Length: 583
Image (cartoon, rainbow, N blue to C red; front, top):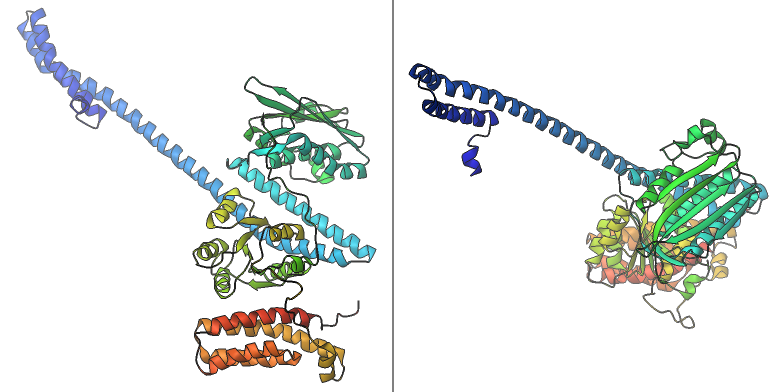
């Protein structure tokens, strides 16, 4: 029916047809009304043309308007697509920058913490703490920019789970008390009896808002900061929880209140110079609270102080299992003895490799390190691991692809934890969807490592009373170098540098089925480890050398596993022979 009424795509053509048809019918109607043949003849001739012309003009105008509307719609769609692509590009850029900045910051902060553990000079400790504080400030800045980007692009995701509201607020205030007391500021907290004990919401984001508002209040007052929490129950059963942070500081001029929650905004330029910050804190708080379905506002009078408040709807719930951050795991330097694990770290950054090795060695662990996903894939096929720390971004093959391929292998599956500098939920979900068991956000600290290690079950339960141990006879080895400790230390250091290279060469030769290369690499390793007179290691290397000489490589991979186990026990013993230079 629509096709009959509108036979043409053009509205002007359809209108013209209507006009012609009506024009042809009009004289017939007029014939019954007027008895004037001459006039009738004129009307018969002119009416279809006249009415058709008018109809065409009307249709043409309609078509022109539709064309303009269609053109403007397309322009708006192009502009919208361009803007959305710009936001996506900015998000990708920030994710990349986050990784590139967090990776070296991981090394800086981790090395600083390691040095603080051994520093004794007061001046050195002061300088190291300055580096530590500056690094943490930079990370806070990075997190602010990333949070702002998520809010701007509408990708701020809330993790809703049961959590103890009263405990959350009290813990947050307790953590900030030390900082406030250093500034001579008294921080107090008052929770109304109506505040529910357990609610369902995003505990991390709620704590972030409270922390930001309280830290701002501490900055701008030297007297008292009060945190007041109240709650009212709605008809739908939810509670409207209101948190107010009250200070008696400098206050805010009336004309400046409007821009407080705007992006990159502070009361005046001198605020940044005096107190620091990006001006994003309150904008981020506003975005978080709005995402929770609440509102945030300020009441202030210049010279008398300010009250920052927010209100959010939270559903009361019964106590549940919360994924909130647990207290710092205890660092046990002999953890590896009571909880033995075979560890692999896939990390392409040499500094972060060193940091990872140092942190794990403080717990007594020896970790195998590879530089990309391909090497990690090869390593798990050669040796069984309990836990893999997998960097997300690596050359050759990234951590996500490597994890997918490892999960496809028919072997005892290890736990895999991502080492990621990304703070975007999409990246974390990508890691989990690939088959990873968790993720550690850079900069990684030793407490995070302990938490991850505790989640793993050892592949082999070690009988501590009967576990085979490998020990060097230092006195006998010293006699071979005329009792010169310095010479022995140099030999040990050189061997430590060479052994990993020989092991990699042996592995490469086996993977390439190169018998001659296997024979030469195993021979070189045999000569190196012979310096320490441990027959089991020498024999394991000699076995591989003979396999290469006879071109019988079928059993080479299993023999390499045996050799690797022996070398792993030997290296810590060699390290003990290295004399530390005098301070």
